[in-house]
Length: 446
Image (tube, rainbow, N blue to C red):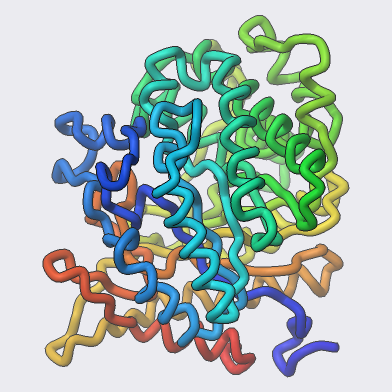
């Protein structure tokens, strides 16, 4: 049974956020220090030297955020847990006040008719674990399993959808190779070790979930990319495949039992700290894949070199861009969803993040008339509908983001929310895109 706009009646419409970006309360109620607390307080790492110390103060204002979700009639809310609220040092006995906060949040969501989708890790690794090697250290994966078990025991009876982590590519590559995210390293060998230990942590946490007997579905959220070939020449098509390796097949191949891509291992295999049994753990069967999509680039073939081991280069494109400099290309969402569905045996796929930053301006009446964002959401929702028609097992769409928040290395200088947050008062004010999304959820938006 489908709605008038063609989407299935049981299609999930939701919103996504993450703990460091919205919660604030950086040192309250026993919370420990994360690598993002450290990174944001390091001069010149974040634009304008902004930090997440206060963020949107959702730690105290969570009821306001739930009221917004209820006004939208959102079916689900995807949020992440701050590991350091639960285990301030990344190990040991749990912090009861942290557990109580997430228990209140989950109960409030359920009472409002909004399904909680809980994510265990959205990049804010405990600083105490980073000082012991972070994701370069195999022990961090074991500590993650322990932390996950605490959350299963505490609220597993009320949460039906779990994800281990968000965009491990960012944690590995932006955190360890480019240095633009915490912990700010620029070390290729460290990056490769982090890749393996992040996936190992995912597999261990998923196995622990299966052992727990909790009823629910479990997935991994990635930010895949398969840039379109600049031309129809075979060499550019091949370059497109190579350009997708580190963002897509590096994660999905081992998850689905295919080991790491051969091309990657030929180049970087000596760095990979694989031990006996690891690949079986990593390929523990999951229930869904979460896809975060914002843009699509174009590539052509280029000579291979030490600096360009995969042999491709990005080319100029014509598309309009968001405030992040990202191309607006809704058809790319359909293409990446179809690509994943055709190459890997996914039972279910969800778009777990999709949205756009624009230089929002508040009019004299206090309203943000963000028509560019409305057009962006509409185009990508249409792309989701097209993917479903093509047979992609797409079951839901989560908008990024419910509210303007701390946007990592850009601080508060980029706005993705459908609700504006006054940086002085922290008052929430819906933008026009909020009301558009409400219409879309109700079936009138396309």
